[in-house]
Image (cartoon, rainbow, N blue to C red; front, side, top):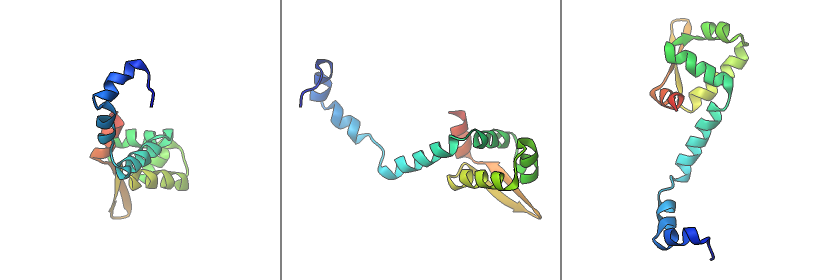
Length: 108
């Protein structure tokens, strides 16, 4: 196969093989893709930012974001599914918190 001159030395020295061997597995790439999909929505990013300050109940998030219960529930489930937040029942309330993984991706 012919390649541009400026890449020949790199290819000849095994650069392409090293690059290919460093690729994460498909399962890891699928997980990263799901996280990026979850982070692609501005509303979900707002939720993460809110939760980065303090765990919150649904009622406070709903009021802060001015959205319906069903819309908030959907977005919370997307974030929870990929492990960016957790939800814990406390008496009659469900309190959501950002995870370490969520904080990591929020800082990126």
